[in-house]
Length: 310
Ligand SMILES: [Zn+2]
Image (cartoon, rainbow, N blue to C red; front, top):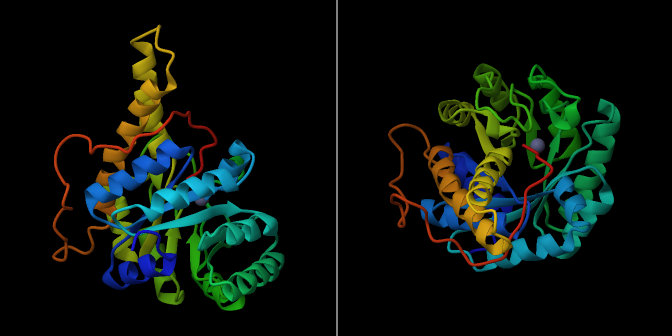
């Protein structure tokens, strides 16, 4: 059960009107804590490795290997996904290493070139059993170029999905990458319109900036995969900062690293309870290890977060 195909996680969630939490990994501590949080919530989860994360580590293989290993021993279904890959080489590397899912991001290209490139990558991936996510226009905030005013056109989205064959579509509906405040205003009516025209699961990027109630509304309107990165980096770094600020003699990275990791797990569990709650009246009971306080987190090393995405 543990290492799962993205479609096995996303498909049932979409059919039930639930969301799936997809959290960006920075170091191994993030991956450990995200899975611990999902186990506490009793829900499936997605570990995402962005192209920026690959750049931080200098290669995909070490961090992918860690995520795949953690997923295989998880107590809940875990998919490992390549996030925001802008090169075909990186997608191919992900396939070679055993990731079952990738976002190919050609959104910086003109529309026709985006369609052509994405269709090619999607066909290549489908021959190897990979699930493919893509993006048309822009999700606000990425690389400082896009704005939260960006909007996906429902008819263009439908045409894009038909022309490329992708399995899921990231849409621009008011969220913005790397937000430090949770006050983004989503266009829930637009989500519902896109859901009516597009036959594949929809992905919300930049979900860190979206308040809990709006996440639930977005999922209720038809959003399925909910990408979160910055929110976890905020709680990780706050815990590390608190830890180091209280002890100038602390030098062991395991001390402050474990503090950061321990802070992520309950935030993941909390977000997953919001994301996976489903429509009112169908809310499932809390997970088996639900309760106050921090779930026990797997042992490990230390790290520091960089390169915010989502
Ligand atoms: Zn994104």
